[in-house]
Length: 251
Ligand code: DC
Image 1 (cartoon, helix red, strand yellow):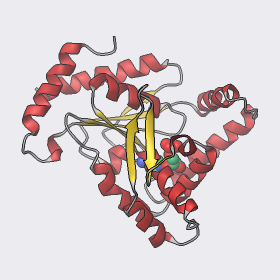
Image 2 (cartoon, rainbow, N blue to C red; image 1 turned 90 degrees about the vertical axis):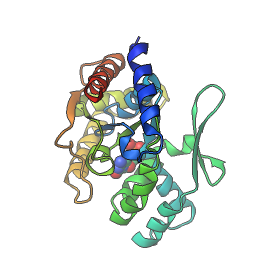
Image 3 (cartoon, protein in one colour; image 1 turned 45 degrees about the vertical axis):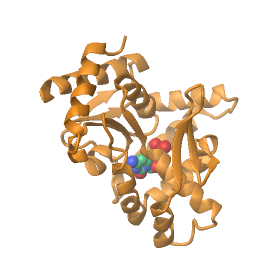
């Protein structure tokens, strides 16, 4: 079992009681930031589910803005127009009967399209625009709802939720991330060379951590977790152990 029922339910009851009529600042947030391929999406989903907290996949929002801008033929329309799309994003998250997550853009289901490499490229272009990042700020903060939120991305701990109770910076070596991505693509029947993937990942890391707008870096008070030699279960257990320490601190 990933977390003791006792500690989780205690945390839920306590936050529900203290939440009544009190600002969202009292709703606990766990941030999980890190480079792509570190496994943060998977870990965030597992931690949120074990705690029964809400989940924010902030990368999906950047992907949605990229997708919406491309569909409207506005990728080259300039920063202000793309920021306006971000500001008025008509998005809804739900899950189907088997619990699979669904993302809706303007009433159409786009979950699969959102995960494509093309959409990732569009996302990284719009994510470099400061006005787009600003426009998404309020939307992201709105995910902070009782009993708690697990937020994953690049700047969750540094910019969006600087007051988060627990900040995790999840890393993995470039070689390990390339290996994971290679396996993922192979499983889908896509044949790419491991060396090319490694180069891609190293280039992207450099761009992400050197860009002037919201560069990828751990918050000063983040706990670093290297997943290179750990299984998904081991990483999840560590994150949940830290979350339990958090609960004791709050008591
Ligand atoms: O995590 P992902 O691959 O879904 O992210 C898509 C793009 O969005 C990626 O280029 C990084 C960017 N992003 C960001 O700049 N800030 C975030 N909080 C989340 C994602």
